[in-house]
Length: 443
Image 1 (tube, rainbow, N blue to C red):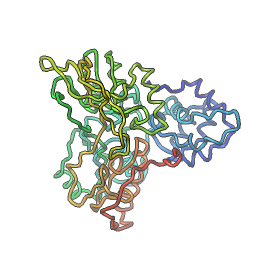
Image 2: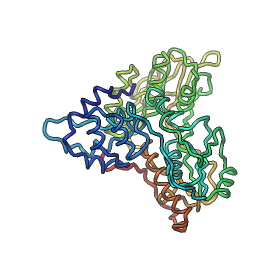
Image 3: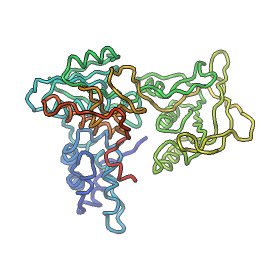
Image 4: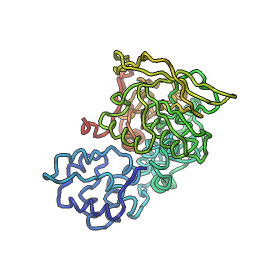
């Protein structure tokens, strides 16, 4: 479980640093949250004023207080006097929002007469809708799930992102907003939206499981990680038995393994490389490994699945082999090669392939160019006039990146709909880079 501060601990933490200046922390925060106001209010035990300081930047304090990339803390790394432990500013933001008075976003701008459609109600799509509503535009928000939240709802386990937090902070109440849930948008429907609305933003995320076939994966008891997490998030309990092999080592594999453990099964997390090659940022690897050990779902490194074995149509075991590292492959990482050991069988009742997510671009209209996993864009404008993008498919990293990117996309949509500029010429061969506001602070 991702633990935060209780009221007393939050006040005590803030009282360690109320006399410091947090101007550089505010400058580093993508939303420029008033960190001085946050720390000062909490030091005085005033959670309502602290929550208002968070709202000075954004309305998602309880969400981002659990999953943002802590750019404020990185900016303050060398700002404390000798002997003063850096304050956990992200947890202070979370405490302010968790315990302070919640005030939903208000929309006071007069109606503009312009209409925008946003496809995808995850972090990027909701932030885009928020930015548009603040400017008085009518917004139709379309999503294939039965509720808003996107991957926050369908992919994050409840112990990482409680549903009550999402229900409190994500809804947008405005007469200018129309929600169209449980609606699938395909190629033809997207063309209709582009014809009907003044602008359209695509914020569909990486919602398709990344696939890798393994002999025997058609047996009952084999799941892909994203579908498994989605089922649990929606209240189902997939039958996994008492011993589960999780294949992969990134965020999806971690969430799957921790979820399975909470269902009462023994978990084997198998990764064909070693700890130094975990597919996460280097500064996160030790934390990942320690967390998994604490939760009794440790990684098993240098093991590669060969095939799923079954009995009576269900999973009974996973045949594996040991690996070792060879020369770099096309990704630049050492290639896993078979070790000089015979294959072995791991008795399991289920196998979950947790290799991450990828986009579904089957709905894209003519004129939209791609660069790998991303839609080619310039300031969230795609190569198709009138179509904006936000979130994962635009290159925004993480939920904080998607929230920030959605607000930026809304700003550009506003300018376009109000006639501030013509659609610019965009280089169709542009190479896209993942973007995370404040990324330079991690390097």
